[in-house]
Length: 162
Image (cartoon, rainbow, N blue to C red; front, side, top):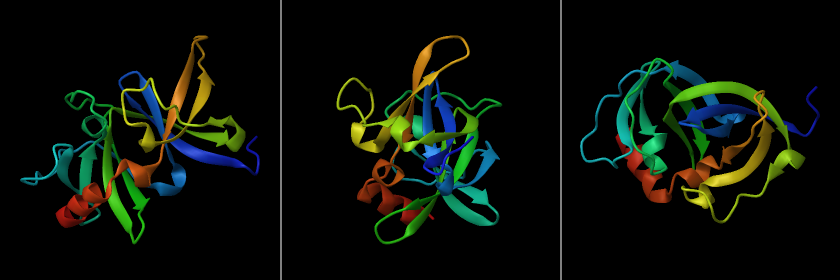
């Protein structure tokens, strides 16, 4: 049973890694469709995705985190997010290998982001949660700080793309 301090997250996979974003920022989850390409954008900006008649800038989360690109599969999804920035809310599509589930984590389950030992930049990370899997193996879920995932230059480039 979820307690008052529990927060809901959508978990998503990139290879063997599991990440999470707050449900509060997820507008919808779409089956993958190839975005309309935009010339001269950052390498991780795949283009615009039509979301209910609006062009939404869409980034490949793998490329943003410095992971190798892979071709989309039947499990590939686009999470349409409303990312709160300092001066506005940015609508953004985030391509993930797969969406796993919606889970609740309590604040006391969330550990501080590690400073070393991760292949991506730790300032993107709000925290990590230890999880036990059904197979008996432990693992971590990395919770993104969406506003920090996008630098001010990223946000400016994505806003111009929209």
